Image (cartoon, rainbow, N blue to C red):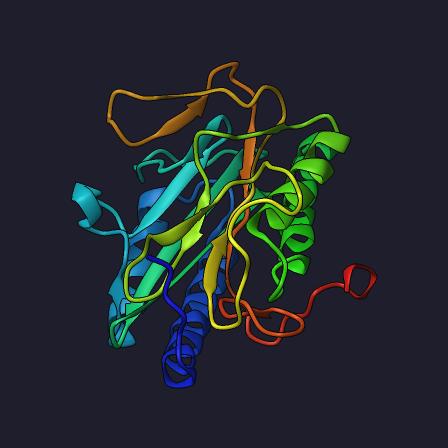
Length: 257
């Protein structure tokens, strides 16, 4: 069932989103060659709990960490570990918080210490895919408008759009209705209404879109071994421009409005 949030509930989600943004900013500042993803995970948990919140991911269906740390061909749900990160690796960090019973979910990708122009383009285009999708997240549009915008931009650059995983509604639960695929046809799917909150999260591969699950039963990896980038924010549908709850003050790029 899709829930429409009230203004008081949306305000709580704004606060959760602001906290999550501060946590992810702190993690991004720590990322450099030699740092471990386990260090990032412990930092995230410490920052979240010190703010009186809970890490959404830790314990969710048995997931053992506070962040998903996915490297290179790992798409999502990567386990943190003690391996030092290497120059040029593509690291995707996904994190969620629960503050006063309300959730926020966000992810970013970065090249550790910088990397190749080819890999940076993948990271940049993935982020662009998010903004193109979010620009369609307006009351009166359809879910397919978001999905199509993401797919069209990724495929115009020759990239693969991961199809086995998708975005989702979010509120008091991390995963609520509806699912938000990153591929689809415009004008199709649920009609968007003001007060809906969606986690829009392009997962874009340098190569093919097909994936498989590693032996830990969590980590999703590209089948062809190509690198993958992930970018996500929690987005409020309004009558006009959507509000990016996990990126306070951010606006849809003017060219997309």
